[in-house]
Length: 337
Image 1 (spheres, one colour):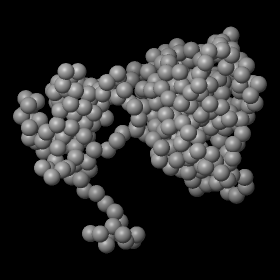
Image 2 (cartoon, rainbow, N blue to C red):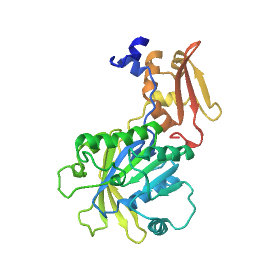
Image 3 (cartoon, rainbow, N blue to C red):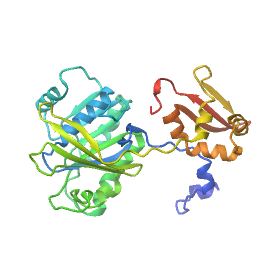
Image 4 (cartoon, rainbow, N blue to C red):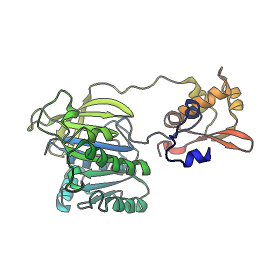
């Protein structure tokens, strides 16, 4: 077995049973129902209001203030505003949010390019700001390597894949501002400038578009691997330079209640914030007609939901006595931390 693991020519596989017997950490939400850990594109035509939306998103996450009706998980934000200068950023933030303190929102107006020191700069920032949730790169063109097969599918895919490997390593979100092309398409995501390799490698994308450039109203389309597709209607407040939510085309889908998760969550409370035991013991306590093995696998699959909906952290580990399940109440609503 060990020889197979060390053989690069041997295909590493896992069985369906092994998948069910393992607890995998899901993508952490940055903005519930809207933005998650991973690498996303944010595209729109020039001067449509992308940078104002980026500043608004960055501010809300760094300040811990809900964006419209979407709760945020607060943390530090790095905004690489590579087409701006400090004076413009100062004026923009003042118009949008006044002059209150915010030590968790950081700006840079210059940075190295991919393959030429950007990774090292971001590594250092994250070591100095371990609570970072989001990095905004405004724009993709400012950090791309110069020359080469600039617009081939393979090159576009690898550029985003490099950034994705970085975001996955740290469990953060990287939001990349990019442009759309003028040619119309039935699918707005086909208007992203470049090849389909950009969207193919990304975890998701946002498209901001107006019917008329002089109009204050816009449509924000959202697509992602781990989230529901959405279309949001928003309107730009020119006095404050912020985007206001108008309506959503469809409501977010919520899974039906799971009686097993509710029963398991009842095992922990403020008076008894922790429980530890075997799957057999837990199966007997929850009052559900379910075997110990099936219960363990159901909880392995639903660990993220148990944490986000019931604020109970689930762990399944092995010790000298066999497999043990741990349930821990997460205090102060820090389920997404």
